[in-house]
Image (cartoon, rainbow, N blue to C red):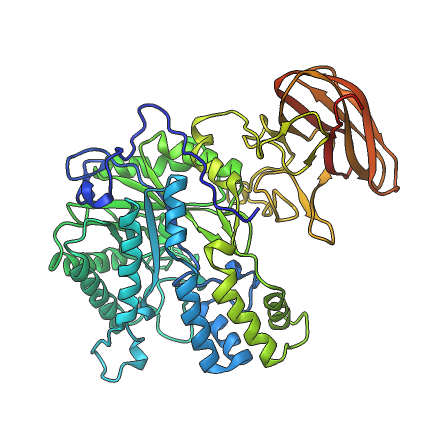
Length: 588
């Protein structure tokens, strides 16, 4: 399934959206007008974007590293240097930056329907840490970092997309969630160090000066997810801080520096508590300002966004869901529908990582897995030659777009399903006179309850206070609630198929006729399945206990020319598994 085919974005009539007009720069500068984001002609713009997490700033979970201490990039780099030396680590990171995001990624995003890109930046690509500056208080600028932004801007402009600059890792780190800002707690944080704050201001002034006349830059997202106890009850991440005065004062300083060189670009600010605590924000900090909030693992109901809507109305400024994702297709559809119904744009997270619940998946080579096992204390140390080969293959080959695994179901959930509750074939099942096989995992694209049903189809642990839910227990192939596992040879199959769960398959027959159907399944404790065609009476199929894969046959089913809907259901299964279905050849 290593392909990059676009899924058309479904758009309901009346939705705020980018007009068909060409490039982003042709729309002029984005700006805040009342509670809407508009272009230079005053036309509303609904941002639909994706964050390029993992590129300029790595987090351990994106590399399937587990905790690996706390998962910060400097920790990851230290382990890489321990395997292949400092010069080897330098080569790895140069290759990583060269290959993780290329123009092919941006071209594909535009085909899928995205009109914006959020770039999470690590400050150390642009300037030295304060403790490494040759002259204290003087900034060393690293031109290669700015040039990477320039190239990305060329790619987004070529696709008519807006580029939003996001300072994801500020000097010293802006919170106690360490990986998101690559923070080293043994050193002064952003909030503990006046020099770190001075350098942050200088960096934004330099960025704003460089791009002041560039309409392809959509906005400056000046500080990602601050999470710090500024005042009030302590919770470690500033969620109970009530005034946040130091944060707002720092934002005023940043905005003043930007406005000294750039009067036109829209500025995005994020509250405390991972972007969500706006306590103490009494009036807009700028005339061209948008407020960002982030949304993860909670319910997708009116109550979940009510505080932000109230804030929007009170301050009279636009809202932007600046970061969300890391959940199932059901959750993606519902969250996007929720905010778009309120005229709020969004940016999902991330475009790619080694795990599966994003548009692109990095298929890491086995040598990387061996390194991870060693670092986590679960395997032997690879020799230096093998370690370098694995690392360079990851950075030069595995992360590149053309070698990524594309997940069309994720794109479908983000663009079509928020506006269309219907099933479509996952693959084109054109059935002629010959026998036709369908993998069980290739059930229809569509919402839960329409294309499939499963007991767990999303993770709401923030709202429920319970444990995190893994909606697809096998963490592979699809991002729905259906559990998928793989055989030793890598072939995927439906696992943990339990009573009441079902999957639908849409077939397109060349001509009507009576055909036999078979299902290949197994059940360690036995079980019963059923097949139903076009809403007709189900036919029961019995799995014998503990006999391995079995082929169950329905000898004669009348099928129509054109579309037919076949539903496979677990009628009485504690833990059944299904590998595939087959329509027998005509006349057999």
